[in-house]
Length: 215
Image (cartoon, rainbow, N blue to C red):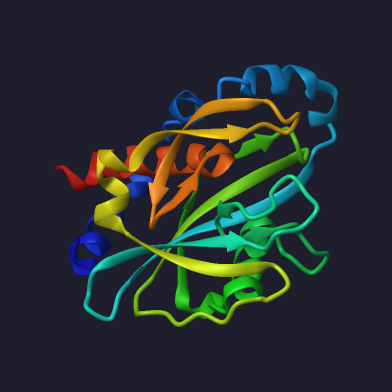
């Protein structure tokens, strides 16, 4: 989709009601309910984090969404695809500031280039005990990226057309935190499987875009 048309349409997104958890659950693994029950007490003292879903134009004027491939490490989110983001620092003036700072640190896109449109539905991630705030933003010009090598393995520049294509929604086999194999709903974007909390956030974004792009 041409970015100029997307830019015009996305301005209407603040008028929409958030689809919320009911829509997010369409991309939830079957074991999520079990995890939520297991982590009921921990959730009361969940750590905070914020991420940014950032759309921007390619050099050819098409609309792209940036995702990142995280480094492999000894942790529950090792080598997973997600949004740029992370934990708040004392100097952050709220969670939106956290999302913008982390985007700068992880992929080298400064806040001056970004217009944050709105906050979407936050999501709790049981295995890491994080409550994640999601912000939606756009950059009005093509971007170049400088990766934080300690955190980010690669940037995935996802075409909006591919993201909105229902064929990108798949079922994939993964291993849960306890090592059990499961089939989970997921997105397949740029050859990568995106599942779990990121997929749940993506489906809310897709639901809202469907409302404004098809009018």
